[in-house]
Length: 338
Ligand code: AQP
Image (cartoon, rainbow, N blue to C red):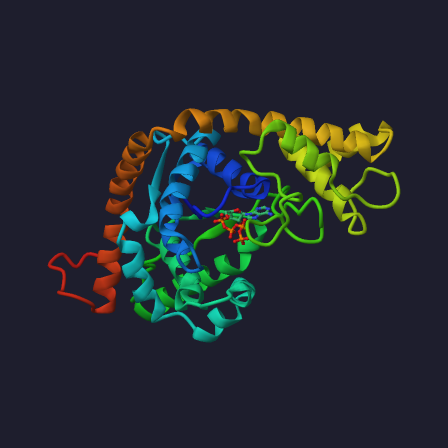
């Protein structure tokens, strides 16, 4: 089985990214051939600073390694190093419906947030995301709940390509998403009706992976909870439900176990204290590992370059098949297709 996921080098990664995506990346290394891509080309679809982009890319590389990605057990690379992603994006545009791109939630949210320019890149972003995955004929894509709509689009693009150009065979693999059962949507601690996010949530409501333990404790102790005292998940208690899920994932337990354990607690204060302690325990080693690795940019670059070489071998083979099927470029002498 082949696993693929992409992650943006923008801003600091938060607890939602860590639980919804990064923890799944680490466990994915045990389940199959895993490829993880730092998607710098996605990051340029909104206003950005070029020097900051480079620096954030190394930040994220060091963070992912510290979280447990092992270049001997996965392929970790930078999107822009594998030019096949952009070529495949253009080719897939021919089987992508414009109206669908215009209706995507993320496009609508992010385009209204842009003050100066709503770039064409922001609209085409989901096609690049489809190309990222389809170039590797990946079977599984670990992501958080917010990516469901993008995953559906890429599945449709793959199906449509196979119908239009496949000639009876599946040139592209229709991928499955892998959304965690618990922690697929970690909420903002200050406004638990909104997801914790890089651009849309408050600093106080967002726990960053690289926050110091004291900051983490402070943010969790100040989390907005709900009326009542019962520690149980329910739609009327989004703040408490969020803390229960976070505590469950951080401890490697189920939310039901946490609810049982917390049944004798004195109130939400105990839940917050337990959650803060568990999150500090989860993230402190990542922070330490990050600080050890971040200064050596040459070592980080070497890992990314080697990853890109390995990734490119796979993507180039897919592109050769796609070009051949679409009648683009010189005909191949060897016409054997999957
Ligand atoms: N709150 C969340 N809970 C669970 N999973 C989440 N993810 C994001 N927020 C949550 C998952 O993190 C992965 C990496 O996301 P990304 O950094 O590539 O970009 P993103 O999805 O745009 O992340 P943000 O933080 O939500 O940024 P903005 O504010 O720009 O939208 C993805 O798998 C995502 O599902």
